[in-house]
Image (cartoon, rainbow, N blue to C red; front, side, top):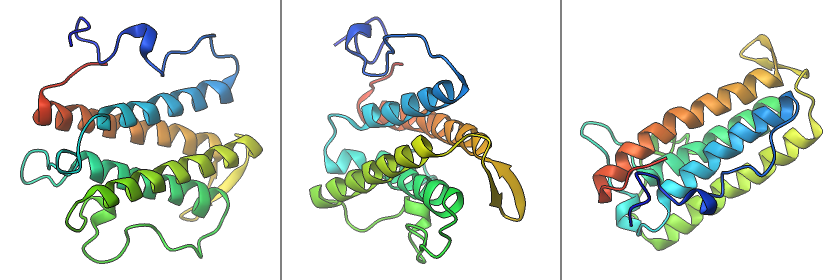
Length: 178
């Protein structure tokens, strides 16, 4: 399918907003949601083996690895930092897990579990943001940091990894686009 270089026809793109964004929080959360959906779109329609396909050696980045890594990032910033629940062990912290990028033999169950984990962490993060003001100050490695800075960091983290996802997806099936 060719949509003039676009991933989807514009009227079918779930990331398109119906109304302009009003206010700082809505703007920041809107960008964060856009990139969350972008990563999900980049994984759409692929089987377990394709999702586990590594990019360009020596990198171990795969779409499944990105999903697992972003579950870890969501958990760390929203549960551990903003809610100050540092007692929760970080996801994919064990030796050899490489922050989610390394995983056991891939199968459909691992893919389902990884996506479910990522979506659960996103849902939790949404709840945290719904009840947290951007001006709230939390401790980040001994430095007082506003929640707004964490949200901006999350947008940056997703944007960077969505760029990786573009390249990985193109290596898998040649599909490119927005």
